[in-house]
Length: 606
Ligand code: F6R
Image (cartoon, rainbow, N blue to C red; front, side):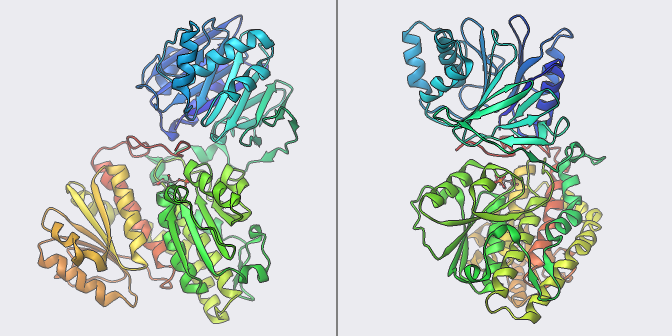
């Protein structure tokens, strides 16, 4: 998705702007631009990479106030002209914008009728003209931005500068994140803390409807009615080094390899060996309240949703509360019945996914109790929820989610343990789960050591036109996530089905052209799964089995044998070989592993 950076202070803005944009590259974009103010605005923008932009910026691109942008096209094709910033006709105002202005056509028609000539096809240019016209009347950039935003329907995070006010940036947020960074006599802003951590750890998140005026010596924030708001800065514990590849060829491989640590961090300080319970202080619920829920409903998008399916099963098994997961993007549109005795859980790595945020807001409007399982501290979803569990997995840079997926599943195991132990889960079972959770980091290391074998298998299967992923009950969300990883980074078509459903339709697809990855844990469904493998092989389908034992060669062509944990926790481990498989398939097919086509890291538009 689009990225925003902004600077005001004593130094030249361009180095920060370009470096900041580079830090935001992981979010996905197609063009980039910067503008600085120095006796008039100086702007460069290009279709292509931030490196192309840096090459296009002349050595003398001086100015201590500036804004920059990476664009992910929505209105108009990727091009130099459509790239942001966009200027007012007199080139006094420059605007960068994330989000979508829904009434752009109508506003554009009105402005054109007034004689304004547009140069781009973007919705954003409407804003630069609206602000450009108003600033002349009000002589206040803040007021001009406020008035322009009143006419706009849609979502935005924006940063605006005025050539006649060389010491001031105005930023505003509605649905698209804006974070302020507080420096030493300098101020930064960005759409993501990734752009800021090299410069400051003191940040302030804007709320929807808020506007901020930044000057070198500080900032002021205002609600939509222009009342000043008080904001407490937050210290972020993510470091610049978290955003480097750390010697790995790709962020994805780095993040897969980090999982022994990230899972350990999600668990740290949360297991109680005396009572075999989980301590989750952020839930903001006492035992009586935790007992009062009769149902759990989990929402999230994409991989977050699949980790929610693992979570729903953990909660049903350990706490014996009916639980299910649903894509947040569907949930928000179907006017859900919100029940007082249901606990809602929203999952998001970024904490900014618009569909999930909108679903949480809908739930809150209807009086629902919502917990967040979120990685990004202080993000919009985290702020919106009544309480929750932070993953502490560190920033996830590669577009495809890996470490956040496993940490979310671990967070659900903790939540299930908590909800179980205030109900009927016995101390012995609580202890079994606590011990199983503690074994996870070591077992993940054992799985990572299987990489050479999994790499060979990925190379063997990568050229298949299509692959089937199957699993039963606990294995089904694992299969879905495995198919998701493969298709999003290798572009190999992959379908996931419950193994039990194969006979009811998809078996017709099985043949030599369609290999199957089968999730076969050593649990009470082992025999059923082995029967399914026999059915696939009988139709000439190849089988790659991921399980706890080597299968008869009549049932599987290849086997990846994993360490065994408690049956409830096996899905957490079983998703990791599928991440490694997808990674090496994508490398074998020479894909852009960390930035797969058409995708963005955090989807802040509808
Ligand atoms: C897949 C992937 C996406 C995200 C989804 C939700 O690998 O990364 O499916 O899981 O867009 O993102 P968050 O968790 O940031 O809300």
